[in-house]
Image (cartoon, rainbow, N blue to C red; front, top):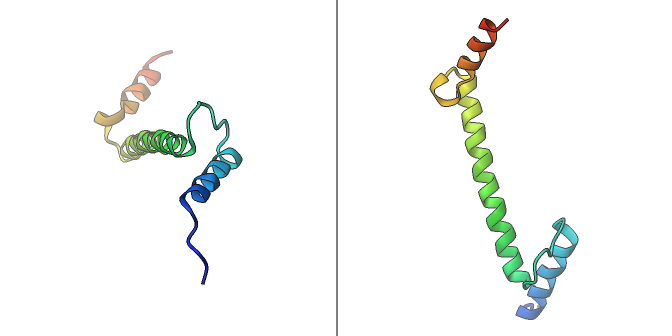
Length: 81
């Protein structure tokens, strides 16, 4: 049976993963755990932004002109010489 990994060893693995796998990191003077929290928080916010954008595009594709205004843009483009 293997021994549980020590907390220090886990943090060390996390730090090495961040350095090896996250472009531009570490970008601030902080520990591995704080860096991981910052990176995950940033990514979660970006995912929410992309989900909102995708939702807008899907509504646009289904003809909901109140959500995106693309129909107004298309109408304007047809009227502009």
